[in-house]
Image 1 (cartoon, rainbow over the protein chains, first blue to last red):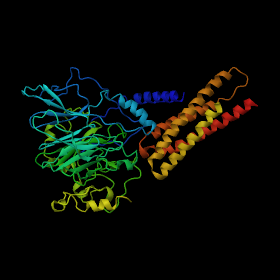
Image 2 (cartoon, rainbow over the protein chains, first blue to last red):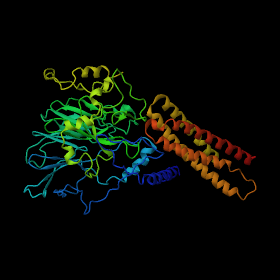
Image 3 (tube, rainbow over the protein chains, first blue to last red):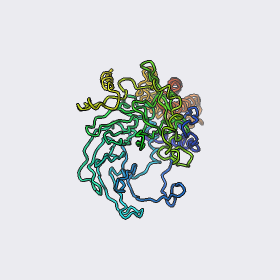
Image 4 (cartoon, each protein chain N blue to C red):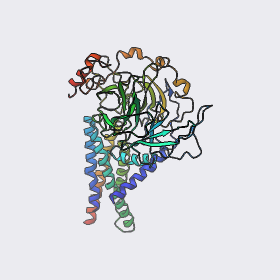
Length: 418
Length: 127
């Protein structure tokens, strides 16, 4: 009886939410380097719509004039990221992370609602290799390159090392050109934070030298509502030493960095970041940003630079002069909650011409007022401050010097437990 | 049995109020998680008591000893306010405050009043 009553209550709530959810799509106007951000709004029910899965059928995404688009593979098991290999082969990472355990009645209802927008396909936990041997545009060759992985997402090839970011570990395969199947089981480079793993996708990029790998680690909650203890090592980009597996936070306060890439030429690291929910349909825009070493980008305390999020208590304490609770702003907005599934109508920053604009041109406007603020760049409290590898650094590092602040490690260790 | 249902919601709503108070004092989110579940539990019992009371009113409508409709109305009020409180508690983090704390207190008071009046009615009938 109790269960039935609870179920009935849930149905009522679901119906109410669906009724509210209708017609609250994001306006899509929050795009560009200086988006006009509306005031936060939140009624009794969150304004959200759940997109229903639908087959492509005869429809295709719209592409720029002169381009055509064709499916090169289907029946994949939740493909999330691809990597073009030097010989033209394409690797596809397939998988899906475990979902975070239910913590509140809200999670129960939200789980039902969200499942309506999710696929029923089971994650493949594998890498599929696609090959167009004759160059006719049809990928006739298809092999399972590796399987029994754990929700693989980020992919990077450095020389003959193929790095795969599983949801719980960064692993490495020895890759030979032309290979269709990995010769051996992967070697673990370093474990990655995986407790709860609400945002499980681990984005990956390697710098030009291949010496460092960068891993995007999403937060464990929307705005820290599961407790900040769970956010230790989350919502940040890690820098990982490819040889030793030593890691350190490279930039922090990035809620869910789902894509990382190096800009050829400048060597600048860029990230696409999913921002927070439940502040209204047009807040907060997801964004593309360059990732600066040691910078704090605001999550969960602030969004889009200086806007404090009142839902986070206690607020961030400024621990020293010049420190602020708010984040660094150097970003281009994509509109609210759309980075992953965004329809590009050619007016946003993903438009080809604009994306290719050199970062230098983008920066002054995007960084608006940053120059003065940079000296006072907000940092995590010392124990969370970027800098300093967490693992023992091999001796030679003392000579080479890690690329960041050299005293960071001491600061971190010294304040680890307060 | 009816009294048990009506009174069972009280400790749950009281627990929710205490959980809210603890969260407001400590910012430890686990307290607000407790409060959310206690409110949901309280709603189940208030809902069942409400159902019972409505059936009672309908059954006794024809009978001579008409009981006041105040009791089911108070139950209805505590259910409605409790439901709103549940939605408020579904907001993330501090967004549920201070409205959640105030609502928890109001819901407890209304539910207590309903139970007290309901108990008086039951005893009156038994006598």
